[in-house]
Amino acid sequence: MGKTIIISNRLPVQLQIDNGEITAIPSVGGLATGMKSVHSGGDSLWIGWSGLTDEEIPDRLAPKIDKALAKHGSSKVNLTESEIDGYYYGFSNRTIWPLFHYFLEYSEFESEYWEAYKKVNQKFADAILEKADDGDTIWVHDYQLMLVPQMVREKKPDISIGFFLHIPFPSFEIFRTLPWREEILNGLLGSDLIGFHTYDYERHFLSSVRRLLGLEVSFNDISLDDRVIKVDSFPMGIDYKKFSEAAKKHNQNKEKDKSELQKRLDTHKKSAPDAKFFLSIDRLDYSKGIAKRIYAFEYFLNKYPQYKEKVRLIVLAVPSRSNVPQYQLLKREVDELVGRINGEFSTVSWTPIWYFYRSMPFENLIDLYTSSDIAWLTPLRDGMNLVAKEYIATRTDQTGVLILSEMAGSANEMNESLLINPNNFEQIADALHTAINMPVEEQKQRNAILQKRLERYNVEKWANDFMNSLLDQKEKDYSYVAR
Ligand code: ADQ
Image: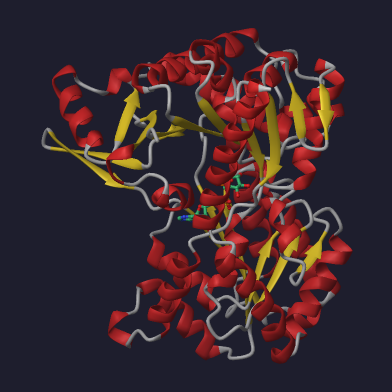
């Protein structure tokens, strides 16, 4: 059996440059953790962009960087600033991201972006081809690299290629508006296995393949002249143990070991023991519905004034893609909205919204998850939403209520939460009211079921299921060709 090559826009390590010395630190993100079982030892290689453009890497440091990355089984694709502008901030995040999240009006169809996307996808494909042998297995990740499977297939027709999309695949009516729709589909069809988070995304993709390319689709197989491509759903899980154990440890912390944030949260809890914390955590992205959530909070305070001074909304927004204009506009909108609502409702002893615009260390994320009575996650569209799963995993005493948008992929597996339509303020206000008053027994019943499911379908199982399915598919393929 050959090696596995994982390929994604970013590598699973972060580079640190200190006095000319380079260190690569493994990142703690879900994908990096989930792939641990696949990306182990010497028989796997991860290819991606290092996060530094060619202009940012002094020539004398380049070999050191390569060496530091190699220690983590990683190899970088070199990209210039202008390539990152066109491929990443351009086509990936101004064309595909908004379109696939149903923000058609935000999608920019610029041929310059498309050219950069093609060029950079070819660079990633070339980086794979340079390292790949015939018996290897390639796993390509996400919307930034949709042309890579076909680019590799052209040069290595028998190699095994899997592709997983981490964001939604939109319905045919949305997807058809993309000027390069056939090219994107053909790029993906270089794979042997194409995976999505949900069955709906899978059906949308198959419908586009049938209607735009006229290919034969039977159940979830696409037949080409010489190959059969399997399309399937693999809902991504979390590193359940990491979150539940961190929460257990956190709950046993003595006063002196607590973080400043936790001490502040405790002080507020003590001063108003009946008050409830609502938690909202996302990257600052228009698809996550942050501004709407804050409007819905205002609606809730007006509809149920008895909760004034009794509830607090903690908004943690992680800075993201801040050179894209829509993200700058959103930042301004959220800043103003929080200011206006706090100005309108605050009293001497109460500020309704605590707003943090930053990334937080893992420890503080656990402080927030474990201290919040209600997690309120209402994306307008979200491929999966791992925050919802992380919140449940940290509720070691099984209390807590999750209010989750129907538009998140995770809603399919989290029926025991309170599912809402993020555009329906009436329903949201009522869900918050229900959550505040939900008996502890009911909270525990719901969370026990959710926890059992999340513990079983964790991120390692997700990665292994995908890899096993890819191996099966390749075996099936060979027998098909041999017939
Ligand atoms: P994202 O859009 O980034 O991912 P999500 O699935 O919620 O969304 O994952 C965010 C991750 O970042 C979580 O693991 C969370 O712990 C972490 N995080 C959030 N806020 C943080 C903060 N303030 N500080 C530090 N860490 C923070 C994309 C898709 C999703 C899909 C994932 C995985 O958009 O729909 O679920 O990929 O496929």
